[in-house]
Amino acid sequence: MKRKVVLLSVLCCLSVLSGVGVLQADSLTVVPSHEEDLAKKSKFKGPDKTHGVKSVTILGAIDLGKDFKDMAGIKLRARELIIEPGGVVAMHQHDSRPGVAYILEGDIIEHRNDQSGPIVRAVGDVAFEQSGVVHWWENLSRKPVRALVVDIVSPN
Image (cartoon, rainbow, N blue to C red; front, side, top):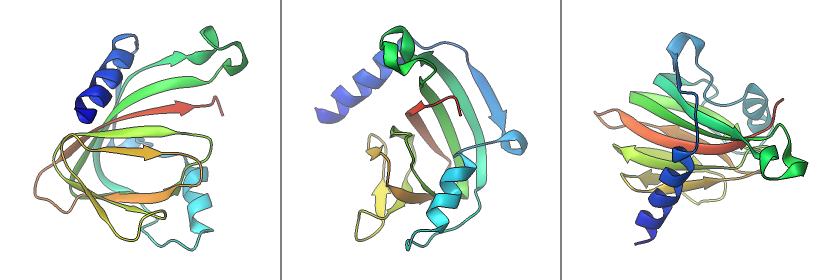
C-alpha cells in the first residue's frame, strides 16, 4: 500500500511538470560536481567516476516560487535515469538537494553512509536522499535499471 501511495504522489507531481528533454552519455550530468567533491572529503568510500549511464531524461520541472514566495528560482524536477549493466553513479554527498529515487525497472545496489551495508533496490523501492547523505549506486545485474528521480534544485 505504501508503495502505491508513493507512486501515486510522484505521478501526480509529474502530471503538472513540463519540458521534456534527453541527455545522452556525452553531455550527461547525473549529479552536481560539487556533490562529488564533498563526498571525497568524507570517510565513506566509493567510486569517483560515473559510467554506464545510458541516459538522463528530464521529464520536467516547476518553479516552486509560484507557490512558495520564498522559494523563487528553486525547482521541483523529475528525471528518468537509465543505468546499463555494470554502470555506476559516482559517490556524492547531497547538499541542499533533497530527492526521492523510485526504481521503475531492474535491481540496483545503493551504498549509503547511513546504512551498515549495501541495499538492493528493486522495482517499487524508494530511496530518500537529503543533505548529508553520501551514497553511490551500482548495477551489478544483467539488465538496465530505470529510476525516476524527483529532486529539489536551486538555480546554482
